[in-house]
Length: 324
Image (tube, rainbow, N blue to C red):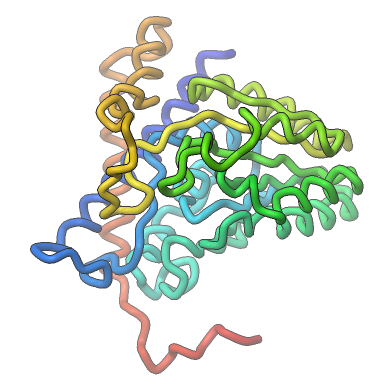
C-alpha cells in the first residue's frame, strides 16, 4: 500500500475521532447534576462510533459521491468518511435550521442527497433501501454502487437475509458491511448468533464473504477494494464483516456494567496503534501527526461554531417538509 494511502486512512480516522470527541463533550456538558436526556445543546440519545473508525475509513476510501451509503443509528464515522459536509452534520445534531434535515432528524436520521448518504435508528433498516439504490444504479449503467452497513446483532434480522438473497439473485452492485463490535447493545454475539462469523452466512446466498480481524484499517481497505471493484464490474454483491471495537457505551449515559472486558478496551484503541505503526514505517512523523490533529480539531471547531450560531427551527414550521 502506498504511503499516501496509509496517511489518508489515518487522517480520516483522526478527523472522525476529533468530531466525536467534541460532540461527546457538548453532549455531556449540560445534562447534570441530574441526568436529563432531553436537556442541553444536544437533546436526545447519542450513539458514538469511537473505535469503529477503521471500518468507515477503509470502505469509503474506495467510494465517491455517486455511490450510496446506508448506515446505522451509529452513523457519524461513515458520514464523515463518505465526504459529508460536517457543518451541516453538526447543525443537524444540534437541531438547527441549517442542518441536513433542517434540524428535524437528529443524529440518527441523517439524509444527504449530495453524498447519497442515509441512516436510520431501525435495526437492519439500511439493507433493503440499498437494494433499491443498487438496482437503480445497475439499470442506469453508470458504475455506481451501494454500500449497506449494519451491526452484528442486526445480522439476525430478517431484512439482512432477505437483502442478501435478493442482491445475489439479481446480481446487484452492492457491498454489505457488518460491524462486529461484540455487543448488540448489551447482548454479546456469542449469546445471540449461532455462527462464529457472519461472513460465513454469505455462502448460503452464493456470494463472497470476508471477515477482517483486529480492527485493521488496512485489512478493511484491501477487502473493500476487492468488493467495490467486483460490484462495479458486474460481479455482484459481497459481504464483509469487520471485527471492530466500541470504545464507548452503546449510547451516552450507558454504564456498561455488562462488559467484563471494559478495563482492557482503551488499550485496543485503533488510532494510537495505527499511529505507532505509521511512525515505525516512516510514513508520518510526530510533527506531521500533531499537525493533522490540529487541523482536524480546527475543522471541527468551525463546524460546531457554525451549528451553534445557526437558528433553531421555528415551532410554527413543525409540519413543514413532512409531505410533498
